[in-house]
Length: 464
Image (cartoon, rainbow, N blue to C red):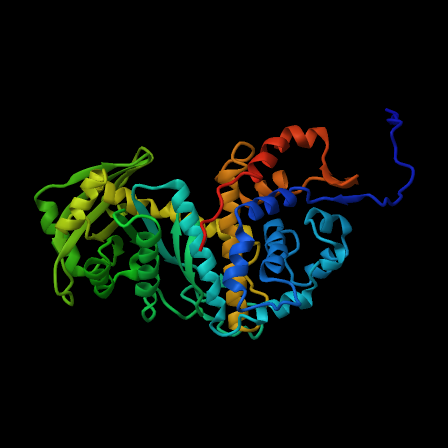
């Protein structure tokens, strides 16, 4: 068959002086960040670390860095030089083109955070946590504690990069997650194991004190963790000093196996999840090196997705917890309407729910695009890591507050960016007004008017 021309063929390529960008959605997110007063917070907390009266403020610089991280299309530091030549992108960021950051400015900015100065970003992250707590108003707070490996095995001469438990060189920060967000973190060298030094006690203490000081003193707090954090010193600190609940996976030493066998002879209970059936025993046990016995729940998988498992293929797991063992904290759960957390089934459910918490790490890595950090200095990379965590926190908050009717809150970063960031827009000036124009198709698909209204009316961060 003979090909028939459409009659709509392009016959020439020309340039235009119109300000056009392919990242029209970045304007919406930046407006949201301004309205929650993020950059006011940054200027207050980072002002004594960076900037002078003659230079650009911390908030102004971090605004463009966060925009680039949220955009996610050009991950190299040199990408700032390329973006600086794009007049349309500058207009979408609502800055003059000559005010666009260069790679040298960004490097000088992060140099200010060498040594331990990078930890100032934790203050920003914790303020964001308090902000979300006072919006969500949870009746009980379940925090998950975990480490995450950032693979920098192919990075040359990175300070602090060392072999991790995954046999890859990198960094291994310890992180506290809540509701799909990383709410606090310690940036650490790769060889720092889960219970390195006093990291666990320090980070949990600061988070717990913040919750009780800035949210609610009486709210029950539960910390979940894997077996890497199993340590009687940690358990005693949670029980006696912080007065919080914990659920920790345990290692299957022979001591606890024998106690489980004795409990199993007396019979067992069953717990049914959405796709599996478990047998469990609820008893007390202690390792030989422990000073006291603790509540122990030993579980055994019986059936998975309607398939009965043979005896030798049934994986066992052990959980240690102090839920229901302290009279005062037990009364706290009852008084606040959380009596169901005393049941063994609820403890098992929370432990199994760590799988959802671990998805936070996966979401973060998908959001940042690559795990290699850009600098050779440990403190600079620490500051860069914290800004990435802050960007991810804000991205998750934006989905909850603004874009939930356009893309699902649990959508991947790629889906979010292709839908709500990567669309064409034109920036025009008429009289004293500057307008961002999009096509009718984009307006309808992305619900532009609704998103614009929500961006301009969020709940702001609390005053520090």
